[in-house]
Amino acid sequence: MEPERIDQIGEWGLLARLRGFCAAELIGDDGALLPAAGDRDWAVTTDLLVDGVHFSDRTTPARSVGWRAVAANLSDLAAMGADPVAITVALALPGDTSVAWAVDLYEGMAACLGRYGGAIAGGDLCRSPVKTVSITALGRVSRDRALRRNAAQPGDAIVVTGIHGASRAGLAVLLEPERFATVPTALQNSWIEAHQYPRPRLDAIAAIAPLTAQRDRPWCAMDSSDGLADALWQISRESRVSMVIDRAALPMPPGLADHLGEDIALDWTLYGGEDFELVLALPPAIADALISQLGPTAARIGTVLERDNERRDRPITLTDSTGRHRDRPLSGKATFQHFAP
Image (cartoon, rainbow, N blue to C red; front, side, top):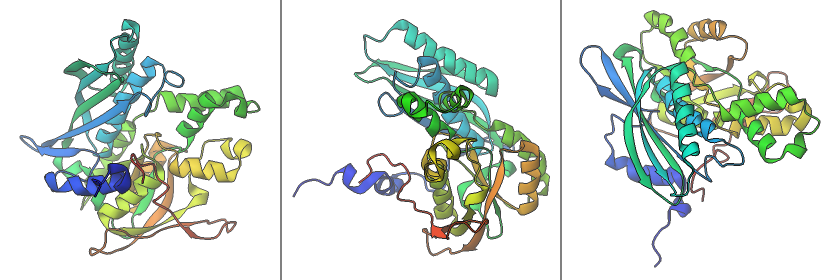
């Protein structure tokens, strides 16, 4: 009998097998919360970027690789409600990599940290046949302000901090420029910017901080770097809740549906990934207060329904408040997975 392969069980299947080796109280979120002195905890997260999987010379200059590597980790800290403190960098490079590429990579990292906070505190370097950038980020969060994936409650409003699908559109422009010949240059550039230089939404954490005085329970959040639909599914699973999502409320990239059609725009909004926004489940009044501070790209897209503590998989329904489209289940199978079976 042949040994079971990872690509037969998929990413989620492998994670389920490995979860038992981890400290149950520390996993299941965008980062791990480690107790510290006083009333603040350490938030720790790690993210990995591999050439040919997460970036390529065709779509991502070295400065952008550095920026995106840092942004991915800062986004995870934001999803925990944490402020960035420092990162360490593990870098693996082929020997024929130009020195300029490595310097540009670090310039991108430094630029992102300079804008959003934190410092490079060291790391490791080795030779490898494939360019690989692995970052571990450290942040601090007040114990009573930490955000968790498993904290969604029935009646909560589901909020996204910004537009989804722009990064996927930017990647498509870089890979297939002829397909977008009729799209205005300014629009193309905005999508490319979203892909190459995403913004970790630490501003949303700053905006929500004053509202925590009204908090009588933990609040729920996750970053959407693996796609909006994936974030909704992860929150649903960890919180054991069902949801209803209004497609008419989803903040899509301006002009995307006009140029590529509604179906593609919806697909990229739900499944495109790498937008590095936050998805939150909050009491309705808090949700409305946060949206008013974040501006017009933030949106209330749905509602948390019943909870079932006995089940991890709960249904998510995609509805349409305009009445143009029928209700349908939101598929979790279409979300991106490494080793998809």
